[in-house]
Image 1 (cartoon, one colour):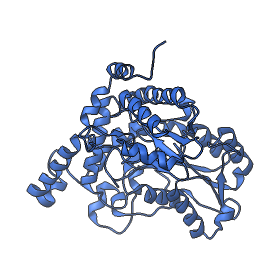
Image 2 (cartoon, one colour):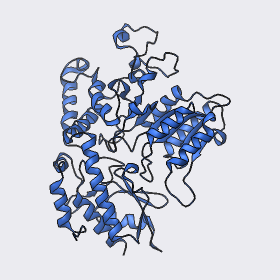
Image 3 (cartoon, rainbow, N blue to C red):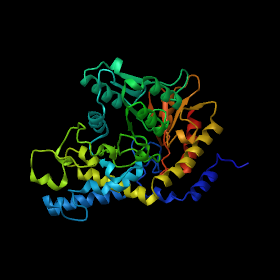
Length: 425
């Protein structure tokens, strides 16, 4: 039998990897000894593509040379700059070009979407969200519920795993929607759950929600750039995502938003409006009568920060160079499977993997807990970090590890498991 736990086998897999060349297009952080870090934290902050500096420097030079004329001059004028990101963004989430826009931050976009799509009534006012939602999502939902005058204890419907389980079962979510659907105004769930790395069945959830008259939106912070999606075909009402995880656009970079085209011509749909969402042909007439564009751009408020958009454009071009989201997914399945196989072969008694083994229900990230008596996850995390691994820890006891296909290698996976074994002693 082939020994999969060997550096020679890992390097053989890297040689067979059709996109292994992409690693050279990223800046890999260094350890104190000059070696590359084993960077497995792209689920929190992606690494910097080498072309990012070039794209940023170009815009800085345009600003130096042109001043305000940069809005209309050069290869990438600032006035329509967000449009240069549209096509590749749409491909990542399975949308039409008119359905996506880069704007704001993730939580701000969720709030703006709830202004339009959370329209509670006395009998239909609940929001379905998972019990262990990312805190910002929970805060946003709770504040929206309070803003509309409802009690979060009554209007927030929390989906929980079964007793003794860590992940949500699709049948339980669908049963919850079936049971409470007449009371649910909005379903807002993650595409990929941040803590466990579980991929939810967005298509089935959307169909079930719509069958009960609910609006359905998704937080795709951990999904965009990680897994292929088909938001338009799934008939999702809205979605939002950040761009600094799997999209590698830098800390706090501008977020993305999806609004299904069926909502674009609904002039009765409430929204918070701004100048940048106004019809382009009449925007500079400076009239005080808002005419929304018939696209997701209608939800924009202000002209976006060009330097941040330049970083996103660099990342999207890098993903395009790799062959797009399907090429990334093809490698990700092999890379995450290899890491899982190593963990199960070498550390089955010491490590528990929370992330589902089913490939349809998992992405890049594997969430691990330590089973050894007297040794907690934080201690192990500190040890592997000291040994040159960058991943992250989430309370109470989860080490999140994300082998990202754009820049991580099979050798990274092998070396991580080697260090983890030593750290468990």
